[in-house]
Amino acid sequence: MHTVFSDGHVWPSFRVNEALRDGLDAISITEHIDYEGFPDEIKKDYNKTYELATAAAKNKNLLIIPGIEISPRVPPYHHNALFVTDANKYPSEYMKDGKKKFIMKPDLTKAQLMAPFLEAKKQQAFVFYNHPSYSWWDKKDTTVFTQFHHELLDQGIMAGVEVVNSGNYNILAHRMAMKYNLTFLGNSDEHYDLYPRYADTHRPMTLVFAKDKTAEGIKQALIARRTAIYVDDFIIARQNEAEQFFKAAVQLTSKKIDRKGEPILEIKLSNNSDIPFKVKATAQYDIEAFPGGQTTLLPQQTTTLILKAIWKYPAKTPLKLEVYNILVSADEVLETTFDIAIDQ
Image 1 (cartoon, rainbow, N blue to C red):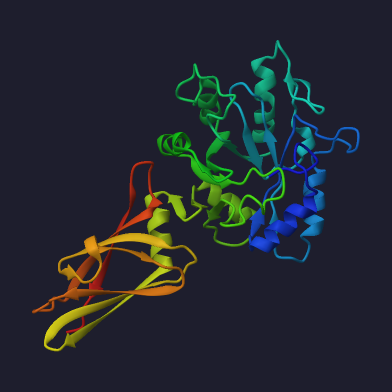
Image 2 (image 1 turned 90 degrees about the horizontal axis):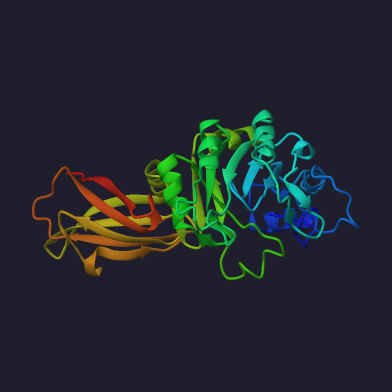
């Protein structure tokens, strides 16, 4: 996200209030280190956003993660650095003019482009590639992952990629994350008021599976790639995180029933999350009432499936689910199984 301290149009405390309204646990406001939107009104100080946001969030149970955006329009393009210790130490010598305009030097060097990334490494920041293939992407580089990116990866500087930006899913970034084993991130990249864009849904967000609600806990989870992206009604994650998330959200119970002489198995799937899950169920027995076994597990509601007819109850039976709105790769949805134990 951005504020008036770079190219945004709101004050840092506004971002804090949005986050409190949305019930978030943590945010990072990542100002461009190479652009000043209001140089005549606001003194250049890239630590100020964090200081103001932290003051606004005091005693409000919201973590503010210090961050910046490195944003040249040539390779390696835009990246965020999170957990920075001093935003003002990040150089932007590749710029000719960043005051109300964005003009890079015509004779810029690789050393100038690499300098802020080396500072990120020095500060042990978590760096990720923002919105690959944006409008200024050089189409000659058909992979979008340049030699510069390989160097950042090899040096242990780049660790993640933005798979969702401003509510838009980026399949190239998703494939990139899988190929290079990068952490998934989803961000609003908002410059104005968030509400108009997300009035009928929610902002895209990164779900971080941290051991505790601290900045260090979040950082360690990002490094370990324990994240998922929540955008519209989709979850995007790797198999392990996706399956554990789904099985934490959906509780299954079962009961044998004699329905006027017909032995059936009643299965209740309780969705304890706020996300509707679109599923296809398959079992060793016929599933009643749902064509093709397809249904939606509505948020905070219980869906009942009937397996029939079970003339001889086994000790257990599997219920397989495909979850169409949980992606575990760019081409695959989550497939998981509940093993139902049947009381004899």
